Amino acid sequence: MKALVYQGPGKKDWMEVPDPVIQQPTDVIVKMIATTICGTDLHILKGDLPEVEVGRILGHEGVGTV
Image (tube, rainbow, N blue to C red; front, side, top):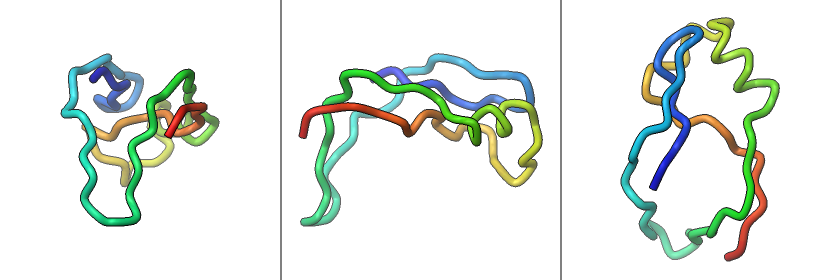
């Protein structure tokens, strides 16, 4: 699947990442219909949060079907 991945301050890239898998009995996989990044993601992209490592998948504001 495709994901928006943080590549360092001011850098992002659409990358192919592994499909999610069920790991715990309480997990679900959501088929995303729409998603976006939020204000926190904008701060990450700007470099305001240096503890965020390269490779982090951005965007957690989503609408989907379980």
